[in-house]
Image (cartoon, rainbow, N blue to C red; front, side, top):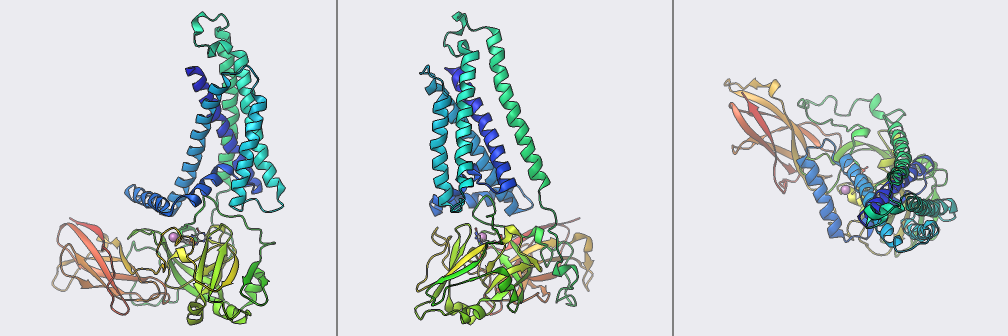
Length: 525
Ligand SMILES: Nc1nc2c(c(=O)[nH]1)N[C@H]1C(S)=C(S)[C@@H](COP(=O)(O)O)O[C@H]1N2
Ligand SMILES: [Mo]
């Protein structure tokens, strides 16, 4: 019995490994569904919002405690690893269970294995189509899913039969008295398992090499930042050494989305579909959108889950079409009050037509730093709404529906803030001990600097203090735009020893930031 449980687990585990590797290749090479990861995404969809949110908070807390350099990249890899680990565990458990059950029968297991595979494959197809990852008519995808499960089930049954054949004795509960239990049998059993292990290992290595080789380096193409100075290049206040880059390089921009992988969008077939309460529904290509007068805006985007001082915030130059211009030309029905913006991954948000009417900066964005949006940042089209957190700004837009009511969006239905208005916050990025100087009275000062951001409401004032001392006003660098962060700097007075530099900020209208202050250690010797 114990032997059965163990062999079943080994076979289940190894076959799952092989399954993962082959599915991974299918996805990388041909964009075919990758069931184990998709299952994870599906579970995330159906989990209650509170559970999901707790999971996200935990992930952020652990990443912060471990001081990982890039929160969102770490989160994405963690999700993928969790999905893969879960698949392996399930594979092992199912393998054991089946070996035990099959032990009660004398029949070969290949056929039942294939049948079980077909059933599981059909369930997987259902899940995939719920996630919209089997495009209608794409029978290749469905066949791939069912086929891979049937193959796995068949392989499982055959391996089990082979093991039974070569090592019948080894499965006996009294091996010592069983004449068939010879060492040759044990060796052959090992050979079967070893063969399977080699196959798994080989394809896993192949997949790993492939994923590594296809890791994106710097996206090709001319960037605005390659040959332009920032509009505030002449500003009197300059950043303190160690302050984060004022314009975030695209590769360093955080990335947050609901799935383990980026949705695949075929741009030759992509159209922005506009429908709902509109007299003449229409479809626009990306080229048609690009023909419109472009709007360029420097934008600071932040995730509502960004911990104070975290890196789920970034600034780049966004280019797109003002939504107000477009909506003005659509034959919107009189009852229409909101737009429901829907994404390829099932994400969606609503935005009031009033809001769009009031703020021409709301735009459909197709480029960041003059490059077409990178796949992970929403290619081909994403929404920009000033003052709101990323959770209100769909990427990978596929359609817009005019509706006559407000609707909670993806995260709002999961219990998150209805408005998603960015909170004002400030961060100490750098305390530049090497740049230490002295004030007029000869006391030692150390330059400190960082960012402050208040959505589209602007920052009027930033203050810093040492330990529990008095607050002193910092100097503000001209921001890149009304909606970006501002860089600040201050020379803080400091005696020798260990100190804590803290920062706080005020919005343009004087509202102080809510929430705790960010601090950074300073050690002067
Ligand atoms: N389609 C889609 N759009 C989305 C999301 C998503 O999961 N799916 N996540 C949102 C969230 S929570 C944030 S913070 C921003 C992040 O944008 P970025 O990944 O380009 O930084 O995208 C928003 N738009
Ligand atoms: Mo977010």
